[in-house]
Image (cartoon, rainbow, N blue to C red):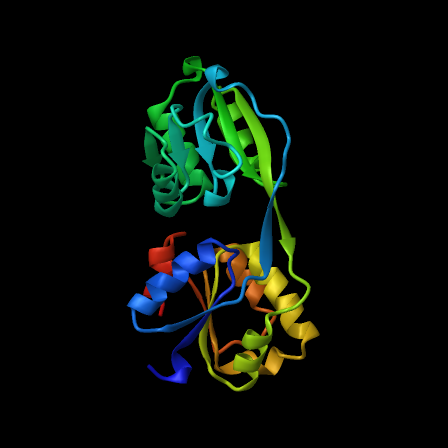
Amino acid sequence: MCLADTVLITRPEPAAGETAIRLAALGFAPMCAPVLTIAPTHGPLPQPATIAAVLATSGNALRPCFPAFRSVPLFAVGDATASRARAMGFDRVVSAAGDAMALAHLIVQDCRPADGTLLLASGQGQGLSLAATLRQAGFRVQRRAVYRTEPVRALPAAAIAALRARRVRAALFFSAESARTFVRLCRAADLAEAVRTVDALAIGAAAGVALQILPWRRVGVAAKPTQDAMLALL
């Protein structure tokens, strides 16, 4: 393995560590450089008996919600979130294997408004469009922000050193928020020129657009909003 195989992982922990394991198995040198931290909120949740299904837009939404809801059917935005839910002991888990729109389509296909209220667990300020889409389809939705993201104050020292030494092959961005935060921190550290030899790989179009501010070697957008599709870009 050579130094130029270093891949920055900008997603928050613990997901960054999970991605690092995948990258190492593929022969790359992962470097976790989260630009966001996850902080749970502690607002009230409805009683599980009043909820027909839980919708999880991220694996980060699962930790604050359970174990109280483990017997309630859970619909996950993607396979990674579904795997985390199963590992936490959820009895019935279905993956939309995509993004929020794929999750909405899955709910419309598999559920009926008459089944009862849906609990949409998401990050602060997230899930609004999904909730609106489902309500337009006749579903009752209780949206709860069970976590919030907070930007770090600076890039990790190891990431700064690797970028300045031109030792980074690629950087992975799993959200538009992480892309915007990285761009801001990179410019603050006077590292804009250091990314000219780095591929920026984004999970979706919004993240890709946010990254265009910096002079990357290239900006790649995954064919599907999944980790597997992102790693395929390497």
